[in-house]
Picture 1 (cartoon, one colour):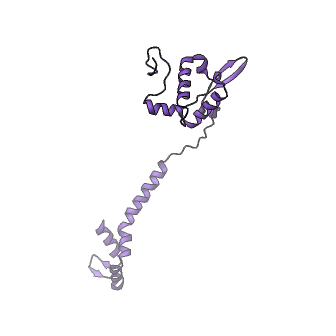
Picture 2 (cartoon, helix red, strand yellow; picture 1 turned 90 degrees about the vertical axis):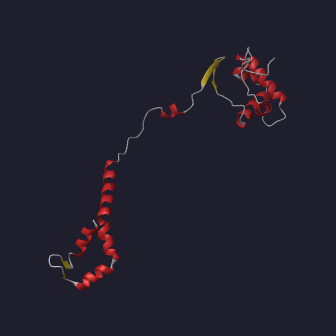
Picture 3 (cartoon, one colour; picture 1 turned 120 degrees about the horizontal axis):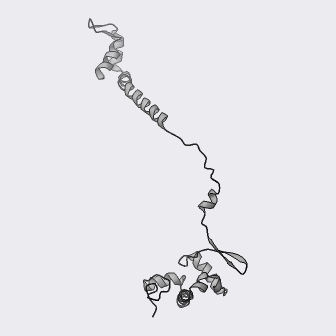
Length: 170
């Protein structure tokens, strides 16, 4: 490639059949100007790179379809269960008592004396009793349930007759 580029550049100034220099000033200027050599030497490489980019741009595929599925917002949200009691329908949601927000909700409900709001109060009274014991015994801390887990190294679990759930039962 270097020889061909040199031959192409000097073809205007040298007659290669006879070996004579046709334009001596132009030839000297050509030898002293590196920019002309660089353009000639790397022009084909730049053209190949440009061609590769154009080919790659042609092969790119774009998806312009708009997602219009009905009820998409409903499907992406959490669906909670419901219970009917005394003709009223109630939404069931979870409270994580280990987080600050969950503990605040739990504390507000218990302090108001509305323990019957919890499903665990009706359906699993022994586990609810254990949770209330932890709440009362560790009430001096910011979050009694987190404090209980730190001190005992055990997590809060459901009541189990075989003591596979709560380990602190007798």
